[in-house]
Length: 423
Image (tube, rainbow, N blue to C red; front, side, top):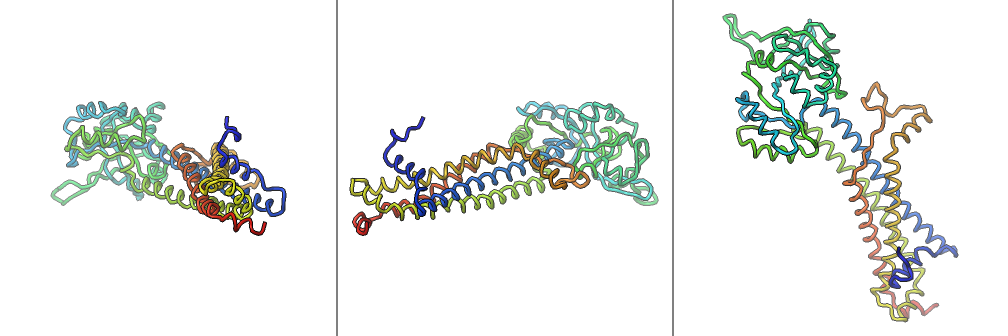
């Protein structure tokens, strides 16, 4: 355990200055300014941890809902044609460490029509028994037996909840699928139409997929779109955060004949926006910590002015300018450490309980910050990450240390004779 008596005298005097200074009016004011600086650092660090944790929570909620409907990695033929031997390609892909499962698919932008209503959708052809290993959506549909209704030649389709609502259809109703392109007849080019029966309606909690995703059997998709088989592979990983690294490794393993895209690239607009927003919010809140840290400058300047006589006596007793500087660095750094640690503890306390705290505020004020009729998420999410908290603490400590340098240097330049002349 640290014992001030066994430390160098710079540490002992600096620690004494940190604890002392409450007896007189002037010293009491200096102590108050020092306390405000510590509280400012603590609140700035806590605010940064809480905001980034909530942003992480929202990002995780949206990402999990998104990845419930799509694969972690998609592998396509480089020329856009059907994969000649998808089982062999799937075996190569699953041999890569971190890849859990693979399944073939066909995905084509199409139109769905019911009467006069018409909506665009991504129609995905899948193999039900293999698709259930790729996405949470398919796994849930497989558990309740709905996915098994997609049989080759049965011409059944499953629709997202918002898409079904827009078309006004329910389970058992017919819908017409209009494929892109057309077929040439003596009367001209006519669109390829096929009537499907709605076998099920699903919801993943992500509007983009609930409003524009439809599932059919892979064989039906290959016949309708004339692809001669699967046009791609969907891969599920053990860790979604490793998608970019594994995607790069797969691109090397599978060669130039295929195109590998992970979920961060297929959803690049959302992913990049979240990363930029988080980075900018971190910079803005770090400035708050910087302002609080540099309040230490005024505190130490006032302390140096108040302790001029003490500094002069130390110098006459043989203390070097470096030792005098060390005393005030210790004083300022101590305030920075106390403020940073207090902020980390406060931030983690709030971040881990933000859902309960927001819920209590909602009940107290009678309002809903995340109404279920507008937002899918009704509870404030939070996910504190060490990758955020450690840099925040280190930056706060570094700013506090930098704030001590100039006042400490000024203290080391005090002339003992001048300081003692009027004492």
